[in-house]
Amino acid sequence: MILGIETSCDDTCAAVVGPDGRVRSSVVASQGLLHERYGGVVPEIASRRHLEVAGPVIQDALERAGAALDEVETVAVTQGPGLIGALLIGLSTAKAIAAARRLPLVPVDHLHAHVVASTLGDAPIEPPFLCLVASGGHTFLARVDDPASHLTLGRTLDDSAGEAFDKGARMLGLPYPGGPQIDRLAREGDAQAFGFPRSRPGGGLDFSFSGVKTALLYVTRDLGEVEATSRRADLAASYQRAIVEALLARAREALEGSGLRRLALGGGVAANSELRRRAGELCEELECDLWAPEAALCTDNAAMIAGAARFLEPLEYPRYLDLDAFARAA
Ligand code: KG4
Ligand code: ZN
Image 1 (cartoon, helix red, strand yellow):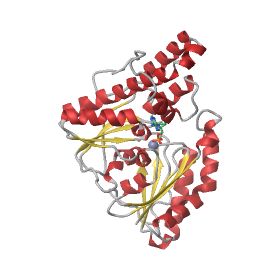
Image 2 (cartoon, rainbow, N blue to C red; image 1 turned 90 degrees about the vertical axis):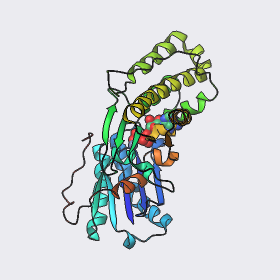
Image 3 (tube, rainbow, N blue to C red; image 1 turned 60 degrees about the vertical axis):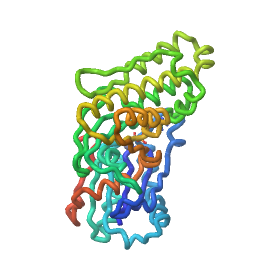
Image 4 (cartoon, rainbow, N blue to C red; image 1 turned 180 degrees about the vertical axis):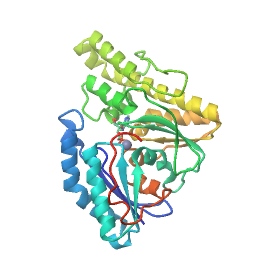
């Protein structure tokens, strides 16, 4: 059994995953409310909170899995990228638990974990596949031929899709994190009411979301506060559609260009209902299979960390004791 720990941003996560990829438990202690009044994550507050709740969250994950700490065979932990202070709390905790029991430890790349999250559960995806990861920190397309690694085919040149959702929501006067709020509000709106740009920079498979964000800023400014508020649902629906179509235009190109027949979604934005629906339509059209894991596996969680660790080489005690966290993508 693998105990996974994830503290790269503002959620304190622990999970227990079996060697077969069955998720025995996955606990997420969200810090959302702590950061909400600042309109975004405050790194120092996140670190302190991780320190307070890491122990109880791990305890809870073990209890829910019906497992004792002695039954854990491997400890897996997010090494990066993320907030350096937040990562260090998780990494130190994982080292302490593993070292005390002389267990092996697996350092996991947070992005790789998002990419292979669909290999968990009852109907796991099998390589080769294409994965579209869209989260608050990252947006990229990756090719997976072997679940131990992935090849990045394209990435955002500026904002992530999640940032575009969060910043757009803020312009519309919606609380943080804005993705789920826009998703909800968009259901009541007309997605064709406003025309927002679908940027496809360069000749490759990169993304750009700064243009759509600026376009929303200008539209809301031109409408004025009263009108922008009364048309909020239309704005949300049109804005969401532009982001979703920009994401799926690249997924289509990557599927057609690579000949891959399986598409997986990952990252918090993969919880978006329109993205899931439209990705389903795209795959039907291209005769591909879609893996859109349940929202709990898309947003940050430790099950994907433990899951990714199954494919990686563990470090034996004491080789992992001087391991460091990294803030930026390797
Ligand atoms: O993967 P994640 O939990 O954390 C990071 O690694 O960044 O992603 C969080 C992002 C936030 O930007 C949030 O607004 C977005 O995922 N998100 C959504 C939805 N649920 C979460 N965006 C659009 N629609 C949703 N339903
Ligand atoms: Zn993430």
